[in-house]
Amino acid sequence: MKKYFHSVRLEADKCCGCTHCLSRCPTEAIRVHDGKAQILSERCIDCGECIRVCPHHAKQAVSSTLDEINKYKLKVAIPAPALFGQFNNLDNIDIVLTGLKAIGFDRVFEVSRAAELVSEATRKLIKENELKKPIISSACPAVVRMIKIRFPELCGNVMPLLAPIEVAARIARKEAMEETGLKSEEIGVFFITPCAAKVTEIHSPAYVEKSACDGAIAFSKIYPELSQAMDHLEEVEPLGQSGLMGIGWANSGGESAAMLGNKYLAADGIENVIRVLEELEDEHIHDVDFVELNACSGGCVGGALTVENPYVAQARIQNLRKYLPVSLNHLEENSIDMMKWENELKFDADIFRLDEDIFKAMSMMERMETIIKDLPGIDCGSCGAPTCRAMAEDIVKGRAKQTDCIFKLKEKIQNVYDQLSGLS
Amino acid sequence: MSGALHLHYEVSGEDFTRAGEASGAVKKRLKSLGYDSDAIRRVAIAMYEAEINMVIHADGGFCDVDIYPDRVEILLADKGPGIPDVEKAMTEGFSTAPDNVRSLGFGAGMGLPNIKKYSDEMRIETTIGVGTNLYLTVKVKK
Image 1: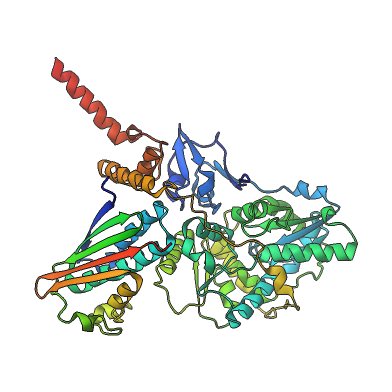
Image 2: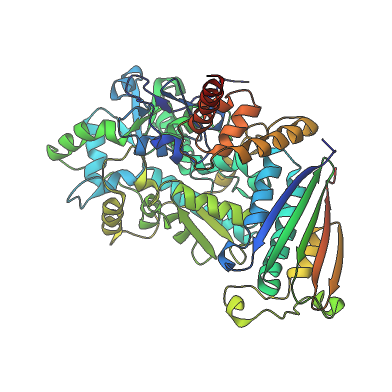
């Protein structure tokens, strides 16, 4: 298997082995061993929750630096719409886009333009009744990974269209090649990203062989230089080509609103997303055609690599959308074909199951249930696993022993003490 | 091991908002076993409906779940009022649920019909004034 790239990493020096990240990880992908957190790579969906909660900043997201763009003859920036919500007193998106050119990019292509195309394509596919309902948005890569490792029955409900970022990268690259005559490898397309999951998606894409993006630069990394450049622009170029529909994708509910009247549901924040997925799987949610799910609270504006409070950014985005045309990008003939997935979304059965052999898995679970009965059940995290149940799982998998539990250890010491005092 | 993995859950009749916890726990365990996903879905739905019924009509009870590699057998037992007319209760749209739960979206009269639809075998033993035992089997179709 190809090694899976993760954007979320641990800086061991800064980690003090506390339990903040442990208890917040939605896929129980973190264990603390020998006083340091470890990420179980196969379970991590790069949602960025651990980055947000770590008080010691030991969890980091790897992303490209601005220097990396210099490897290419022509540099193209494709900014996420959430970027426009990061600046105080901004009344014109063109200032941000021109600012990107001032810090080294030759061209810009807003991801919100591609979002408008994806919205139109989705509406078309819904109308033609081609998709299994309810359709789940494929835009948030952390959500798609979550479905891929935990919700086998929902893999077929994920909209089989590329996320706007991938569509934007493809169009931007093609346009740049046509207009400059440069070869694809001479052009660097960089996504300006609010989150870690998108960085991972570019390096290890779920449903294409290779991403059309060459890298992703975090909002937080580009922010100081960009905001300074924006303050010193001599001229603002009219570069913006998105309508309010595309810009709206930055906020939770924005993609749904672009469904224009289809019955939809929009949930944000990873815990809420999981609850909705559970209910969808159990067929408790009816009368909904489209489901928009964002792992971050507030939507992409809430990404772990943003600089502004998500709700402040949300309000700014709403302001910027005022007086914009509804949509400025429309499908051309055959453009839906270019948006289709190259690979089917396949469930990764191995991630959470105890064993491939059902008989073995059953006897492991029987042991787990016995172990759990004997544990204190307070999910304190002291053993290094997020819950007593996860610890029991680790024990039957041979990754932990019962005395890793401090309560069990105390009991054992007490027994030894009692025996010894009985001797005297 | 006796060939089956046995799970037991008490279903509280006191707190309606906790209904669905047992079926949720069984679903989670089946997923850890790497069980067939279609069977998991059917167990989760059938058991959920039965659990809700137990809370609405019978003030709770208990569930015994036996997981075999090729099937899941579930007993849901309560000491409720019993079902006077099982055939009628099996009719789609027939419901005796009180108004307070209807406002939550329950009581559409699809409980027992759905349980039958999603399970492969279903048997009801019911005695008026004594209680109801509902036996379900969901098989792995492969």
